[in-house]
Image 1 (spheres, rainbow, N blue to C red):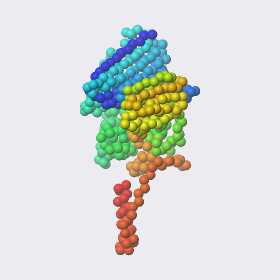
Image 2 (image 1 turned 180 degrees about the horizontal axis):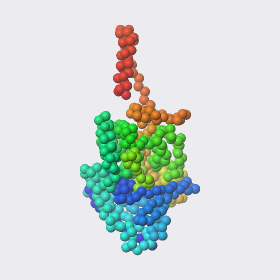
Image 3 (image 1 turned 135 degrees about the horizontal axis):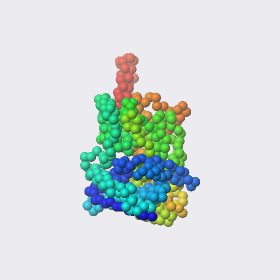
Image 4 (image 1 turned 135 degrees about the vertical axis):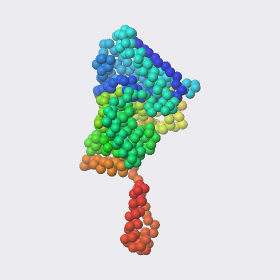
Length: 461
């Protein structure tokens, strides 16, 4: 068996925390590299874990592989390997490391490992490692330039979108009409739909778009809702898994959502909660951009950016991880079935984290991240930030917006469906001296003033 390893190294002026969201966005990176989408099948196992099998056609070959569990430490390291069902190619592994340098910049390395029953020269030709290295260098330098506050719109220059000219003209015209009606995010939305890479168009979240376009969240949400009515977008209701945040059930209308779902990726059942895990997301209408089937990278840390650490530990293994956890609330669990435990980080102090055969245990706070596995089996530690839902447009929030009620009055629940209300605001107002007012000006005039008072309040609310 032949093992070929290639390493590319850079030093960038940008800080590691600024580079991480770009270099760890492996789905966008793979699309920019011209790699095809691939399909993944989740196979539940008797012990409650999940085995994932990927399939694709690459390099003229029909490939099938075991999609290993990725490991990462946010801002520092990413590792992923695939074990192929092939006599020629047995293993592919990728490692990205970001090491903060003394000058405030970052030393970056990308390591590709290939294990195959082929001579080195044949592997070099089959994988096109020379051109791969050139493309890799170009994309990483583009990402670094973006992180160093260049004027580029995106980190990676993806291949131009093949949108026919008549479609471009229609989208532009519709957006201009929306902008004339006061929807100020319409033109940025049109540019995004026409030119963004496909990985940026899947499950679009208005708050994320608002930050990119430098508009208010409300402006982005109302523009997306209006764009559905104009035929530019489709509205999806995603029943999101509370662990991996994946949309395991998607419906076009609220009344099509089931009461609960099963997540094959996490192998858990979970209930529907309109205030927590039913999220409104958007995708381009098929007449504007039809997205492909499958994924560019299931292992992307940015797809689960609420997970700050995902690290494998053998039984009895301990480690000190180069992770930085900002102050706040977190949850520790494992990828494998089991319980979870919540904890707080305060003043940079992180409790020692111990995986057991039962619930994870917390130890004394330290200024570094100490992890242990005292269980009897190999476990993959997961540390997730509990603030992950801050960008989500929940069904509860969307359906209480006036813009939604104006545009989607037909979106209702099934008879008998119940929605839990997590928060409600009550406003009580009074017209001072109203009894005297009726006596002075008469019932008709006084009631007209009361109605005017209601109109003022309605506009304000």
